[in-house]
Amino acid sequence: MINFLGKAIQNLYYSIRYTISGGTRFKTVVSQAASISYDSLIISLVIVFVSAAVIAIQVSKQFLMTGAEAYVGGSIAIVMIREIAPGFVALAIGARAGTAISAEIANMQVTSQVDAIKTLKIDPVGYYFSPRILAAAITVPMVVLIAEVIGILGGLVVSYATIGLHPARYINSVWLWLSTKDIYISLLKAFIFGILIALVCATQGYETKGGAKDVGISTTKAAVLSTVYMLFADFIINIIFYL
Image (cartoon, rainbow, N blue to C red):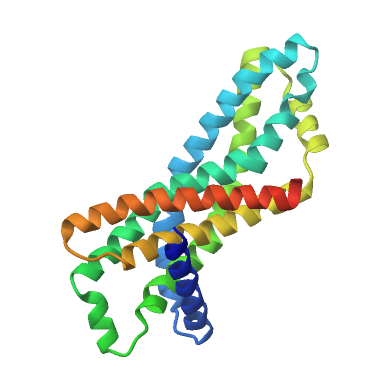
């Protein structure tokens, strides 16, 4: 994993250099943004909504038994914005779009399309990596922000349906507990997770050698590695901002 991390950082440097030099096309970035985040939007929102609903079911009755039902909204909002929304959205996008990135680049590698790019004196890392990294870094925070709203609303609906908690009390609790710092950190997490998804999956695809069988193996590795690196990044961010 250390060797792979070194290759990923090197590829990130080449991608940044390629972008600064003006090689990245806006049209390609938009196309990748649609493929990475827009196509993963529905599944991400469904996952976050169901997660919020399950959390609301678990905590609503317990809070009601202790007379603390007024804090249900704030508790769900804090959990949703700090961890659930950025984490689950990143995992959903990584599972759907990240594996697609790895498979696409791996297929290009084993069919010698990467070598063809090199003969044209174009940096293949910058050409393939930079639009995907840019697209993920920009759009994953957008999906997370939408998911946070949907998750909080999902908790509201379930709390009202299970314990009859008035929406006004729920929303008031959200405003009292939530801070702008939590939102900023959540978006920072999403930004970093987006970069990691694109970078790790693209690097894994780029390092693929062999044939069609190796493309499938590489795709599986990309899903596992992107998840592991995101969990480590989440842990480090929480230590920095919340310890």
